[in-house]
Image (cartoon, rainbow, N blue to C red; front, top):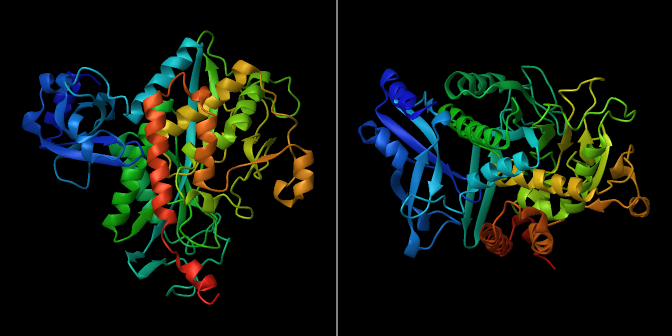
Amino acid sequence: MSTIDILSRLDSDNIEWVDLQFTDLQGILHHVTISRRLVDSSSIERGFGKLDGSSVRGFTGIEESDLVLKPISSTYAVIPWYKNTARLLCQVYSVGGRDRFPRDPRLVAEETEKYLAEQGYRAFVAVEPEFFIFDKVEVRLDPGFQLYRVESREAPWSENSGVFTRFKEGYYPTPPKDKLLGIRLEIMEVLREYFGVEAEITHHEVATAGQAEINFRYSTITGTSDNLQTLKFVVKNIAYKHGLVATFMPKPIIGDNGSGMHTHISLWSTSNGENLFYDDSDEYAEISQLARYFIGGLIEHGRALSAIVSPTVNSYKRLVPGYEAPVYLAWSRANRSAAIRVPIYHRRDHDGKRIEYRAPDPSTNPYLALPAIILAGLDGVKKKLDPGDPIDKNIYALSEEERKKLGIKTLPRTLDEALDELETDNEWLKPVFSREILETYISMKRAEAKKISSYVSPAEAYYYLDV
């Protein structure tokens, strides 16, 4: 869509307000709303000087805070729950509006696509974002008093009509157990009809209380990142409209499954259009040697990669054995106890051949996470890193001695541990990630981990108050 097309759509859709949206370094979507009267071909080209970068976490200090938002024409969409309002995702430009702001995370995704093209590759990415929809959430964090409580119409501990789901029995139940199907279908319809996001599959996930998954069609790195941010925006607003609370927090409930974001990747040749991960002569999983090297890169850099794809303190409460979350850096076909899986639902599936990286969760910033996954894999291709033999056993059931004998590494147990790994293992990111964005990200996440670790949790009080 061109600038002229945007202006034409604004008129034909009777738009009075334009919502300019952008993503900060931690992955949070922000917005500023402007009058349609301020939007013309000149202002779209020049950008809108409406952003104080010093008020956005991870962006700038007050001495260099005037940033510019330039709309991305292809992201135009009417927001159906606001009257005469459209949204446009934006790129962030530095003071003066001439150069891209180096800490704009979307720039990392764009530059990764350029880097891939220089190597003769094109990547397609799909994600499986999981999330929870609760009836009510209470959170208080006052000195001397803490409260965190959720209510769900699907949970056995809440008021219900006798139709509820027991712990870890939430996968694929039909209504009336699945009480949120109507909400999910409404979300999918809004994504498709208004935002151009081709939502394809939805189902209830394993966790008891309102855990959902919505999948949309694969795209490029930047396209999938844009679509994930759009999905989060729509999910939260549709839930709010119904008096519910949607969260993409990785582990909101103790003792039940958390929310992951399994990520599917394939590399294609720009010269002949072939899927470079497919090899029909491979008897194990029909994957190529290049795909194996790519997996080798993910295993080699998986511990450092965790700091980006599992970016919160809460992420590591999900990454524990027993809840189908990956803990071990191993690969296999159709084995969900390994961090890297090669789906093999059908044979001779040239277009569908891909690898699935299961470590990411939906709290991640997709504009950083998807490039980081790709760059880790490309480093494996460049260095011809052997991923070792596939592990076709339930890795959770192996003893520590057996895992050690097989050379299986574990993912970090905490965000601080993951950040330690990223500080010492980041050369593979440097073809795209600038030193500035890496240092800013690590510093921001160190401060986050330090702040959260200083709080006394109810569990600590329960177990230690009488020592």
